[in-house]
Length: 257
Image (tube, rainbow, N blue to C red):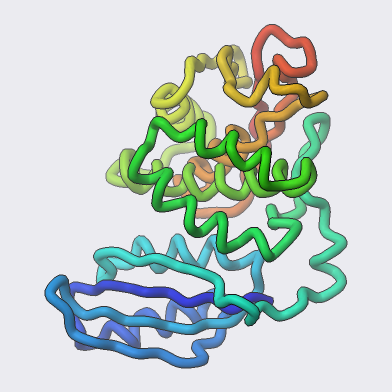
């Protein structure tokens, strides 16, 4: 479980708390306290909520896309996180490069959440020039923390890119979504092409940095975040089947749903 504070700016005061409170509850969280004030940009609502960490991404996406919300930011409350249940702490950290995993993406160390939440607005402002900030995390996190955290950030970025650039289109079948959403979105940041059922990236910035094996966890997370948001599900699993860091000619991603 984790405690999070959301600061939301809405276009109208009336009905804002009721509507967003229902979103919080529907995602399995509890609204512990709230405060609303009027500002120059609209109604400013602060909510302190508590709930399962593995549902936080979905809650943030639902709040951020709510029609009453103009903008919002989230930050875990220092010292308020509740120790996870044993089942959650034993969950696999991230999908391995050789086989898909059904386990949810989690951040191994909840203490990293404030760092991640502070980084996300910076990535949004500087997108697509984001990789220098992501690589900087190598010096702050252990290898295990880095892999899982980069996949989590990738999912967040993928969901954001979909809402920014692709949300006005109709829902596409999975194969079409890969071709018309995942591929052009990846081309915003890197060289990419489809080869059969795989998406190939030839210039991943995560390769050749002294680590062994597949290493493009952010890119796999970004693709999964794009497609899950496009489909309105949480069923896509993206597997890095080949990686330049392991000797392949390109980093190749497979899609399972």
